[in-house]
Length: 463
Figure 1 (spheres, one colour):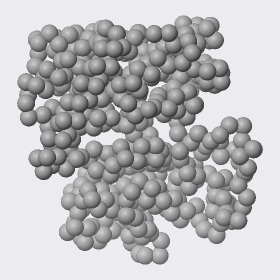
Figure 2: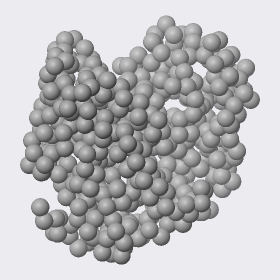
Figure 3: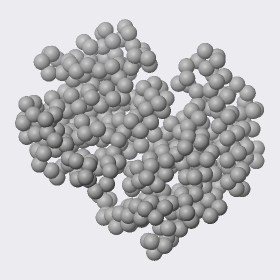
Figure 4: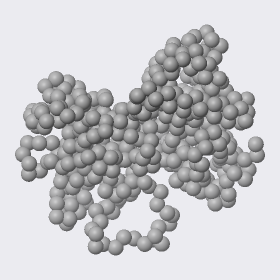
């Protein structure tokens, strides 16, 4: 299909601007430019596809291996090689859910075989998307009719990512992976607005990628492929808190008093793209103990530490928890709690403002004491209790302390949540509030493994 006119002149201009930002970006902490890092990434992908993934998929489609073995091996490969984000909710988790809820194993196997085979053209691709979508919808309806909760059912919105992942394994020059962050970047740049028709949305996504391959190759005077276009969108949409970075350069950060006049829209070169409210966007800078924020907090009649707690509480409220600040003035207690009433779990949390990384061993005795006190009542009402520390970053000496806390208290897991990761979760929630629930298929999944949770891990899960 001719994709020449799929983007107007203004959209083409904006896309080229972002491409140029990507091509001219400086070297990062590892000494590589984004282009150099992406080139290495793609080489690893291609090698893994040819050596393992493509033969494995071919064997499954030919009937050499059964579905459960295929699913297990795909899981193993992606755990060892985190190159696509397939371990997230729309990849392996979706795969597991479909197989788990299907009551007819033979039918399930045939549906997968039909859907995963690379389409010869867009018409067949549309048909396979719609057919598999209807199958997933029927599984969900049967699951709910059996008296189960909707959280255990596979989500229809996962279908385009899941199928396109396997299609690109078979022909990576034709079928782009339907990444959530790529869709978000495209909508933020006003290049496209999905129409909520899964099949048509994926084909439009594909056609825009094809148009950009040609446009970027001409404008950038270098060869672009689908993976390269993907990396431009990753570069644009991978960091949802650019506002925080920019704010570090100002003398009056995002603490805006109600009486202060907000900037007029005419003052902006472009309309805002961020979904993140300022009270949440500023969390990473607060966690790092930015000096200008210390002074701003004083002028606001509070301390940076107390303001940090209030902003964390606000973030958790936005996510949908029933929250309560405990903290200062109430004795040896955590800073706050958050309750997921419908999903039967509770969170006790602390905020730690640190210019350098926070070490969990510093306060482990105090933490055990007040968790024990607070969890007595909570354990009678909630199936799981999680303890979270929010800070800028964490020292890598937490394993023994976490093990001790879990053994001596009622908490199920201890999560060391980097402030940037909390921002990423809030952004995902605001973008798709009905898709990211508090339950086991959503935010609770972040809490089921103790240790550090950073923004990259959040994005991989939400892929």
